[in-house]
Length: 500
Ligand code: BGC
Image (cartoon, rainbow, N blue to C red):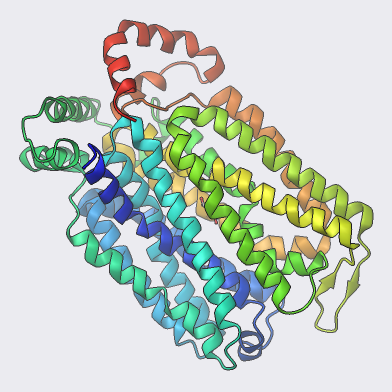
């Protein structure tokens, strides 16, 4: 057994939370296009669709805000388990929906569960991980999100052949299965060692570290060293008495809150969920005809998203966060720009009887748009997808970590909510203008990352104090951090060269 097998196992199991998250995001996209669904809910227009899509994210927003308190008070592990229960309730209501109101309420309740999961899973993963694989471990949740979206797409695709209302009820109901699996498996997973130390349960923390790091050897040097580091960090946290929500607005935490909120907002402002929620209708607009073609193209989108996350899992701890984000932004920006030009230059708008818009783009440019959309998703999946979750989960001190992450996660959901609500309207109204807006945001984000985001790869969670106490201009602060590294050379080198 490899040295980190247990850590991967625990991180992998908790990542099922990401699967639920992704499934819920993915399942709705193709259902919106199903004839039985449209008939049952009286053909919702773009505002109605926006509300149905976004109420999940509104629930996620509320859930993530509550998650900070739940994960501190009852532990990260129990937060994950309670989220499964709430999620199942929401999924059951949606599955049995008799009208639009029930569907919306069900989506909101499922969203509460997903919101709690989306905050507690990355925090849990980052707290059980050694520094040199922390990025990889949190990327597992992103990978699970992409699997969730992918599986949902294909289940939707299979079910759209069913000639009854089961075509949409089955894909919605099936998500209860992974939620039950996650709940049951979490019973056997340990508590976060950092949460245990913070709650004065030192012996248990030592046992967990031994299980994760040394095959059960309670007194292994790496276990003792990490335990001491955590105890010291918790002691300093207590001395500085940083603990409450108001501390998030004070120095030295404020800068990290702004960076965490901004990275999550920018992750959504990549526009990823326009392609996750509405790709089927965009493919239709772009000229893919028939009932199957847009759905199939959306299924391929899911495969691209999942596959392109793999390089991040393998190499994110080598590439680093900054470089990867900037390259990702460049890729996203270019692909958006090409889509904008291709649509702008060739589109000729007409409307179907049901009000849906066709852009009547000729074959060549329409294939170019589809390829660019896939390349955009790939650029996102390698960069902003995982790092949007990794970065906030690793930059805060222990005592404020879950509260701070509940705020940064809420920022992700609020932007997700707004985009879900307005983009169906904008896709129709300004078509290629939306691509151009996203391109501009992406090019600007390169400068934002370069100027403000310090590198965090390979740092222990306890090291973050040093990284984030200097100037807010990260490109100017490198000298100070290099001096710190020189002063701690042996220590830092040892951390970085541990088996990868
Ligand atoms: C984002 C989701 C998005 C997904 C796509 C996640 O990191 O937070 O909003 O749908 O990636 O893979």
